[in-house]
Length: 178
Ligand code: SF4
Ligand code: SF4
Image (cartoon, rainbow, N blue to C red):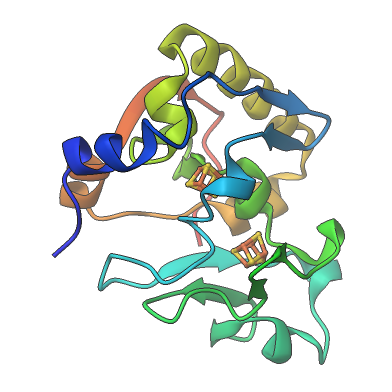
């Protein structure tokens, strides 16, 4: 069974006695909680796989070594964690990582930006700051082609959204979800 939010807070409060920097930088979220967390790269709590679409230019023979694959262009995370996760963090250069990795704890679900509540950055950063960084992430997502944006958007079950995410009320122009 996955930990409650209160259990997560108890685990992380001693680890993160001070707030850390969380800032949108160019095309990814610079998140200083990550090196001591790695919750979203390691073995996943959820039984449902978490899909991470790859962009066309990221595809190649290396993907099956880098990731567990749901289909030819969709990497995913499950209870094994990510194939590229090491004790020192992600072994991939940034350009080989799925867009989802640079966005997290923001998640593009259909055409709305959601915030994964269980990330320490979400738990310890004032919501107003996360909303402001989320708007920067949304601006960057708008710089992608419609095709790329619709490709990387996911469609989480309603119960997962209700239990794990906060709606930031940041809506992007509708992309045709595939
Ligand atoms: S859960 Fe949040 S802080 Fe932890 S590794 Fe993922 S993005 Fe970083
Ligand atoms: S590609 Fe790297 S950053 Fe993304 S989930 Fe895998 S280990 Fe984490």
